[in-house]
Length: 261
Image (cartoon, rainbow, N blue to C red; front, side, top):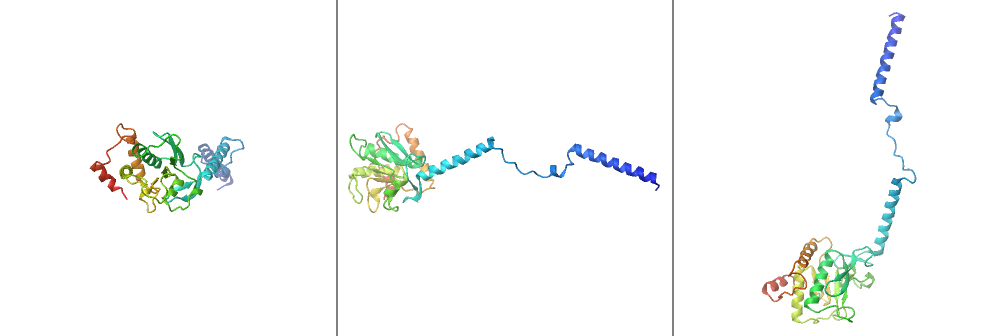
């Protein structure tokens, strides 16, 4: 091959290479190493919306943690629900009215409140009227965990908002006989409404006849089902607390016997 032919071939190869490079560049398939390599994320500049949202999230977490410290104890009461240190501070214990009595009670929000307040209202209408003018200490719900003498006792459930005491000064611990046989019959009928999920302190080995406490543990699905039925009763004329049933009817006696001692 003579020098002229060699020069012509080099020129053709160079021209072809330039054409191919131009074609790849136009389609984006050819890139410099800097363009082809993934770029590290760039932090948002100070004052940007992303930085602002991150600060807001941190502040919200700090507020939630502060609320948790105000009421959480990490200690369970006898039925397994957590005792809480305060009422109406964003925790689970809230003050609820007891319709028909003019009273309020601090209990655990949700299904426990529905169950316990149903018991209080039926007690008011059928056992002994509550809300009498001038009578002190007619109803006691939540108590501070510091007041709990023994976390194994059913009255410790008050500190978790899952127990109430009716007239705490009238039915002292360890004493039976505070109610007549007829009143006990009604109490057993009331407990049957809750399908035994609320237990009467009069049935404990060491009685406390003013006490009514939740017998279900956290995670039990039954309270939601029974509380839903009680709420439906309250919205149905002729049902629910305030409608006085015949607790001596054989069907009701058999029902009550299923949830007795």
